[in-house]
Image 1 (cartoon, rainbow, N blue to C red):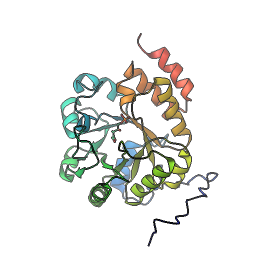
Image 2: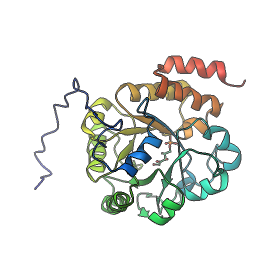
Image 3: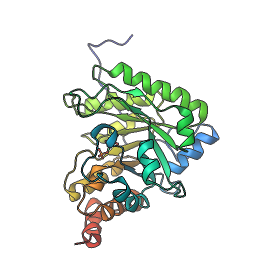
Length: 292
Ligand code: 5RP
């Protein structure tokens, strides 16, 4: 049985040894079934092995947040530059044409909004029939490890994985951070690994110190969240650092749709993720491309 005291922290992450995917381009997914792999291949480009997800699921917690006041105006111009659209069913149905062929990461957990002091209580809300009806390439479940609702959110995750495995739908486990929760690499190492071991096929987390260790210790691909809006140059550096330290993609929201020029920003992010550009090169592209 694991003890709380005397835990020996992980030391050897074999950072000099890349994890070796022999027969499939998505880390840790070699032994999955065809349908699961087919969906994962819509998320992670088979050429680059990476993905650019556009997150615009903020309304389920924040309401009409800045940049997303009008989904029908804000999202369509960005969507064509994303590999995956991460959203709630309500947002997708209202602002994306079903003729538009992009992978969907469907937000299926919810239960708290910014009107609560503590937003960590979530449930697995959207059933699998609805996710199939929405043609989800994966379903996204929030976890709050370290919060008082940790067990509830891990139960949600496990239930989603049980059902996802039954239907061949990958689960994107999101590592949430509450206002009083730590954001140290020690926290992310624990949270990311827990989410992966519960069976999530993809983990979404934040960038942090020692990120390469977190990637090494995570047996499945990591996509990095952008978090609160920061200057465009810094957001592109963050994306570059995450990718160069082993992230399989980014899943950014506010740093795209709150940018001065959101379309130029998502195009610049693609340069980092799929074309191997540095943060500096991508920022130069952004400045040259953005409308003044
Ligand atoms: C919440 C989420 C959101 O999709 C994500 O945080 C939004 O992206 P960003 O932080 O880049 O605005 O998963 O936990």
